[in-house]
Amino acid sequence: MVRGFTASGRFRLDEGDHAALLLTPEWASAWDAPALTDLTPGHVAAALALERPPEFLLLGTGPSLARPPLAFIRALEGQGIGVEAMDSRAAARTWAVLRAEERWIAAALLPL
Image (cartoon, rainbow, N blue to C red):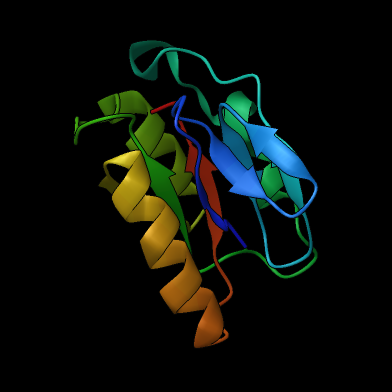
């Protein structure tokens, strides 16, 4: 779970804070995130490579909502995985709510 945000704009987890994150129901990891405009399915492949595929990818697009590249969305939809984009703070909060409901989702949170 994301526990909060630091004063310097990083995501706080139990084991430390990170500029960007990949999250699954099974693990959380720091992420060497690309610029949103450069995002490809390969950048989030680890978060999608679960034995049971996620319902969708919750994409935090950074400090404000921005549209991810259409090729990225189409590629994930071609794998049967939808993409829900929102600013990264909202995505972190939404992650907590959906996981509390035991939804099987993945998340990629770009830097704030």
